[in-house]
Picture (tube, helix red, strand yellow):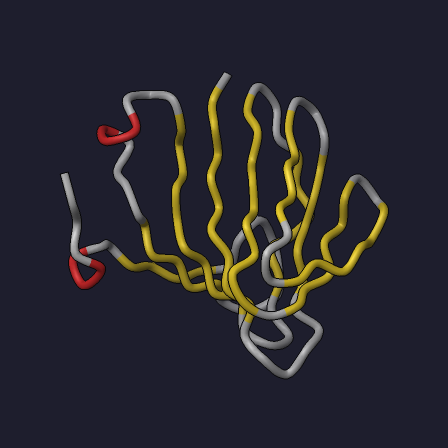
Length: 114
């Protein structure tokens, strides 16, 4: 199977009560993930925007930072993440991500189910 980038569904919206609009390109459908994951998306977080603080129960969300720099809140501890970094949040843990720079942040998000 292959999917051309131009055919990937795109959407935007406020995510988990965060600031501004987050732009998402879905890289796979739920059916393509065979109930093992519920999200596989390329995400753009523009300057001043964020993914709000939220918890994950019975699942794990990974972020792989492709471009830029963001502040990642890992259960109340803020760390700066850069291109090439990976984060993981799951099983009752909480996180958020905020772009405090003047450049967009691009990442791949994957939520794997229990």
